[in-house]
Amino acid sequence: MARIAGITLPQDKPVHIGLTAIYGIGHSAAGKILAEAKVDPCLRVRDMTEAQVNEVRTIVEKRHRVEGDLRREILGNIKRLKEIGTYRGSRHAKRLPARGQRTKTNSRTVRGNKRTTMGSGRRALTKT
Figure 1 (cartoon, one colour):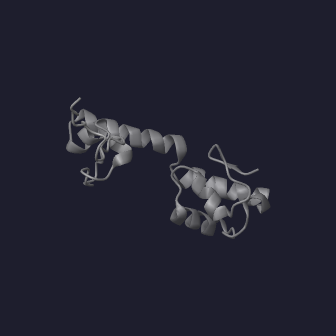
Figure 2: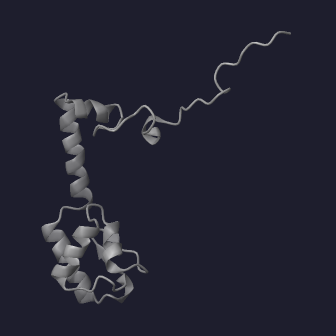
């Protein structure tokens, strides 16, 4: 069982995919880590030797900010933006897109599913 940065890597996946389970490591960073550790990226996580796991673990811990440290840093940056009153900080506070995306038709997951369709709004009063 390979445990790196407090995360148990999925056993049945290739190492380069399994490393992306760690917050802060994407596909390109995983490739660079494996190249530096001289580990075959197509090797399954369950087939890694203990020496290979230790080599990857030391590289990740020494050269990359991952998991808790990275989450804390990002939350601190967002908190700072809110405190100094920037536009981006206000967008974060309102839970709206902060990078210029349109909100009239998209960003439903952020704004909530409040779409009104024909007939679900106010109904016309019928004569009785």
